[in-house]
Every structure is written in C-alpha cells, then in structure tokens.
Length: 477
Image (tube, rainbow, N blue to C red):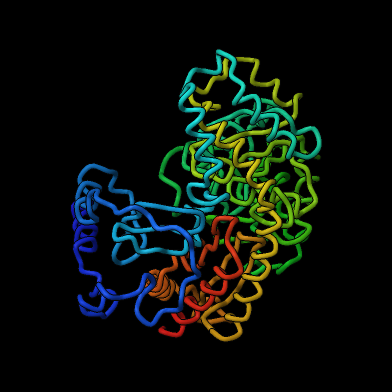
C-alpha cells in the first residue's frame, strides 16, 4: 500500500500542469522567458541544447513508479525531467535552462559535460571499456599517480572503488585489520554511506535501518551553531577521550569524520577539533580516517582537501563524487605500511579502477589545474557567502550561513533563540526558486538547510542571480 500511495503521488505531481504551480495561464507559461515571468534575468550562456524528442515527464514518472525502488524520492512539488547539461546549467525536456546550485549532490565539480572530461571518456571507451586489474593498463596507474601527488605526507597508495560508501567500507575494514581492534568512533550528525559498516558509522536515524550495526561509538558533534560549546573545538574533543575510556577497552580501531558534514547540513567542524581528536585517537592506537567524499577535490577553495583546513594529516583518506565529475568512482588513499594489511587475504574489486572511470578522474584533475577551479571556488564562494550573510540580515528566517568555498549551507529557522527548524518553509522556497530557474539542494538532520554545492565553474554573475532569486523566494513566505 505504501508503494502504491507513493507511486500515485509521483504520477499526480508529474501530470499536474505547470501553471498549477506558477499561478500562470497556459498561454503565459508558453510565452514566459526561460526563468519565468517577472523573474530576475539569468546570466547569458552560449549554449542551446538540441530539441528533445524522448519520453516526457509523465511517462518517465509512470515507469519510475512501476519499475524502480519505492524508496526513491524527488525534489519539488512537480518533479523535473532533466535531459541536458552544460557546465553550471541544466535543461529540462522543454529546453528551459536552470542554474545548477546543487551539482548533482556536490558531485559535478568541473561542470556538466565538460569537453575535456567527455573527450577522455570517449577516447578511453573507444580503446577498451573494461578489462580487469589482473591485467596492466596505464589509465588506472596514471590516475593513481596523479591523485597521490595531491596528498600530503606519506599518503600515496590508492585503492579504487565505485562509490563513497564502498570507499568508507574499505577504510573502516583497513583500520580494524591494521590495529587489531574493532571499535570505531564517528560523529553524531555524520553520514558515511548506506552499507553495513558505513551505516553503523552514520549517526542520523533518517539513514539507518534496523540491522546489526556493531562496534561504533558516536561522539558529540562539534557544531558551532547548534552545539553546546559553540566554536570551541578542543572542548568538544574531550568527548572523544571519554568515549574511549568509558565505551571501549581503551584501544580503538579508528575515528572517521568529515571536515564539513555534507548530508548533515554543511556543518563545518569547530576550529581546533580535529587536531585534538586525532591525538586522542592515535594515543589509543587508532587510525584517523578523513571522509572527503563531499568536502574534497578543491570544493572548499582554501584547500584541495577539507581536512587541510584543520591542519591535520589523516592516516586514511576516502573520496568519491567530485573526483569523477559524475562518473562512478571512489578511492581510498593510505600509507604503504597500512596498505599492506590487504595482502593478508585476497582483496579484489571488479570495477574499481575501471579504465573509463579512471581516465575521467585523471581528466578532472587536469581541468581543475588548467582552469584554476580551486581558486575560483575560493573567490566566488567567498563572494557568495558574503551575499548570503547579507540576506541573513534581511530575512529573519535565516538562522545561519556557513561553509567554505562552494560548499555552503543556509539554515532556515522560525525562531532564532530556539533554532526551530523551518521544514515547511524551505520546501516552499525551493519550489519558488525552481520556478525562477535555480536548483538548489537541501539537507541537515531536520531537512531545513539549503546545500549550495554548485559546479566549481560557478561565476560571480551566477552568484548574483542566485541571491536575487533566493531573496525573492524568501520574501514570498
């Protein structure tokens, strides 16, 4: 019954005419500019997608409801059928352009269909699409070398996977094997994946099923906005020591955390937290794992990796999303000594290090360097954050603006003192912004935080348009 109800809602939303959501007549909708009647003008862009002649939204919605998992959900009252993308823009079935401020959940870093990345994919696919790591191929070796060159310290051995969940699963297993201990410490509000061990490390009930999840302890989250100690990182870190002393044998396998929690609502860990936490974990024999699936690969602007913002060097680093610009690829990077633990048995991943995916990943690193996208993330991200803070002064519903570079969060609350999550309001604002041509994500434990994670080619002009649209949408509440 639940699946039937969910399917009906999706179909009803898909079949609803656009004018029902915009208040416009059918004629007005047809005549409206690409980002809506009366909406701010979108920055000019020299690309027009070819006419789309594929299945329409209603047909896709019907098939999705019938043949795909009932657990799938979609943004917006009326879902979008996205059929084309170019750099920081997406296009729907009618050719309407949208500014993408979500980047496929912080995944598209170089830009949609970046020509250099596409060329690398096509050229590799023409030669060999898949062999196996049992044979030699230069694509995987070249990318591993390039990736290792981006890492600090002795982090130079790369294991390729297909996703961030896989990467974190492998990292947790390596830590347990290397130390001979089982206990893992992670942070409340963190998200690390949806498989067995990673679901255990994840600390939000929204993402946890009722299955066996053992050996994980969730420490106090160093959240500067909602946390008990504000921005005092070392004070939060004392809970790590108490967790070790009261919840384990005194020895642990490892500690895993994001430097900026993505799914958790773009929560940047309080300053000074990671140095203190890493010391406590290492004193207890554990390894320190940096989950860089969302914060890594130049997105924070100030650094290539999120953990560098806290001045630490992990023992293991995991990554995915941005390293493939949308191709399915993840990676674990560690030291030669720690990497040796996987020689105790046979470790193998059929698709990890696939030549097409690694060719794409290598092209991503080259584009980031050539187009100075890390620098752009810093400059444009700082500009955008400043503008968001100005909106905060204007709109009382904005409780907090946070993050770095182009990994930004805007938390909406109905009461500043109680920090009451504005869950219904954020949905209204998202729908209004979509109608005006801007797509943005949301997250956080309460679902009340805008996740602003656009492709790193985002411009100041895009930022101005984004701010103008958000301002209008907030004013409609």
